[in-house]
Image (cartoon, rainbow, N blue to C red):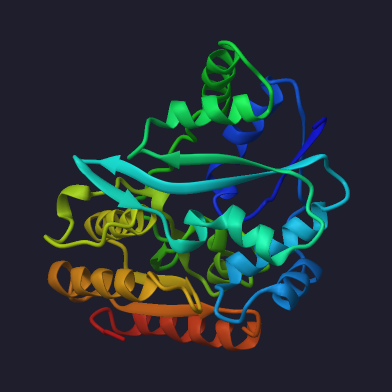
Length: 304
């Protein structure tokens, strides 16, 4: 297992630096797949069941791009995290990502898993078991994890100001693997800028878990979006844009919760939902963004 492949997809957009740093510090070479292109999208769509969401299909395209070039594939299994004394679970694609990959992609190299399930043990335990699976024994993994975490660090959050005069501030809520992938999202963030708006992201505001509704789903990645939405409303955004993948089973619930929060806390803030799949067209997206921004400019009290 000289070279370990990591797919630049799904939660690698949040954790790639940590994963890569940890594996490299154990003495392996890491090969990260190239940014998504149309060929990867088409390759993943060809082998994936139609019911899968677009990011999961594209993950398979990244797997195919690495197959034959690496000695093993790193694939995380993100099952459960404990937060605020409760258990929160990942979505089905993160719970079963290694299994799905094995079932749909033929002639795979060996898969090494990082299984984070805090019902069974800490995140540190998951990294220790990953190191053992890679043949690294003893306490070397502890130093590798400590150094990788320090190197990955936390990016300094930009501070959102509702007093800036460079276009309406649109709070964009969506998973990083959708928003940060210009092919999957049709460069949504860039298009917002082109139509004269400012995109306010989760990292630009303070999350507000204290403002959660009484009842929220026990999905940890969706909880992050709900907390970000509350933070954006408190920060004073001019509108909310909810970006989701078609066939995402959790977004319907999450988006409804955020819409209700907006009605209750800032009824003047309009909300737009945008869905992406492999058939999404750029022209239609631009038209919707232009209309949304124009409505905010002309009628600050408008709701959509």
